[in-house]
Image (tube, rainbow, N blue to C red):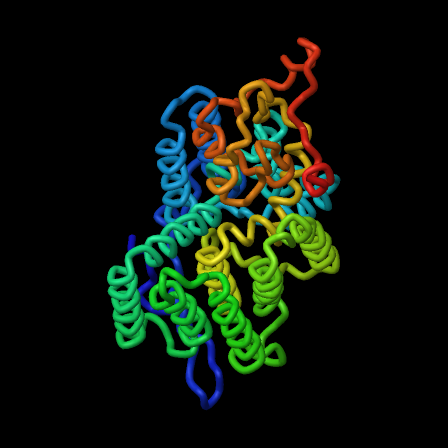
Length: 414
């Protein structure tokens, strides 16, 4: 079965042309492990449980954790983006599932089964889903790695930019993508890549990136009003792009003043509230990440997902830090997790080597922001004195040592 449908989805824009977006076809369109008498497929539940179990084992037991993490992330992306039909919008599904508990328990289970298994692992091991499983987090980390590579290798960066341009032009020429579908995010991609490929090494790339981010924001605003046309398309078609425009504004402030990073992270709780309100009022709105998990995509979702991935090349895992509603909820659960990363003060030399390796900047002199940490364990692996360890916090309580929990407020005072 082909990954893309032979006939692209086409939406009319009157006399100005069409928006051509390929329909993503999953390898397994039919239910593999259906609940008897229903169309509910248990395969996504089994895959999620298996990946979380493997990730947990690798986190706790393996020495080469980062290689294992990349392997688990790649398997997760293949399974959920290419293989099966899960729904990772856990906030939306939890709200919908809760409303159905007293009406239809099977339907409620369909909506809540992914969140239940993720939340269960989070209560024991922390945000292992975010650091090991989430495909959008994986793509953000790959984007950051690519931009860093392009910054160090100018010729390779320029050649890769040319290759991307050729591929996009080929897709447009071949009719796979419409020009209007490409134009909104082609501008930001080119501007931001040029910033990292052309700006001299001696210059501060982030200072120049502010101009690229400003250009990207203006392109997104223009795209919203002149391409997405909120008066023509329904709210479901346009709401996702608002999240990315807000993320662009936040990132502009943080790039200008890095000290704002910790103060901006609680904004993701506002994202949770807004997403919940939208769903409560009866709007089945797509999030920026829905493009990876559903067959039916819209231009707003494509535009938003591309914006998040490209933006992470400038500011790593920006979506995870400031806007992800699922990450906010899992961060609250992680505060009560059993396994935690602990700093041994007797071993810590205050070298701060744990700080630059953290993709979400959750470490400050070895102290960890519990609700932001995605448990990638890169800080543990980078510590030269083995001052950071991953351990069962309940053993700390039995031995009289306080658990490794540092609230965000304490970190801000440092």
